[in-house]
Amino acid sequence: MKPYRYMALFLAALLAGTPFLGGCAPKVGGNDYTASGAQSSYSVEYGTVESVRTVSINNDSDAKTAIGAVGGGVVGGILGSMIGGGRGRTLATAVGVGAGALAGGAASGAVGNQAGVEVTVRLDSGGVIVVVQGDDISFTPGQRVHIITGHGSTRVAPL
Image 1 (cartoon, one colour):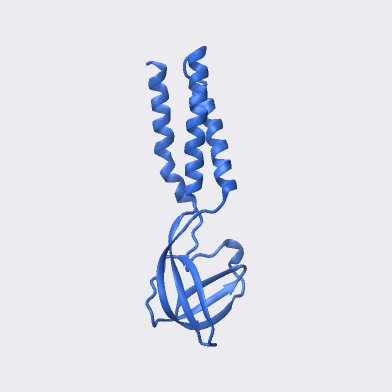
Image 2 (cartoon, one colour):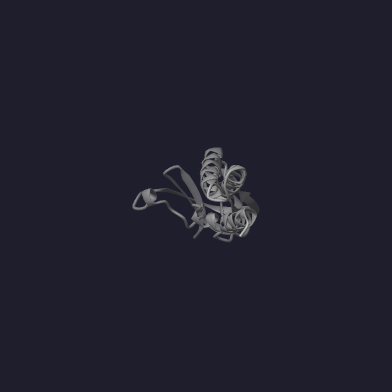
């Protein structure tokens, strides 16, 4: 098999696994708690949903994207260096580093992206708050809810 075919197989395998990396992402839905948040107390307020809007919750960590790019570049370079010999090996290594960095950065940047909802709630105390969370719970205007706050997070849940 020619070195270019190995490179094509390598790139196809690298890119084929990219979509599955999102499965490792932490979710931020109304039903999701971290392990450190379990068996803890939270404050609760009651209110009524005024409006609900669909939003996109995007990963905002440049550090994760950079780590993914570096890791992908290292793996791509190692795999590329196994192809061919002489100048062909050098070219395959360079292409592997570049392709691996692009794929790793894109994959890690996508981790953490999810569909969400922006829920506007009129509190029984008279105030109004907006909470953004994953779309794992459906809300409708007029619905009674409770707002759970603690450990650096706030979530809305139906009564």
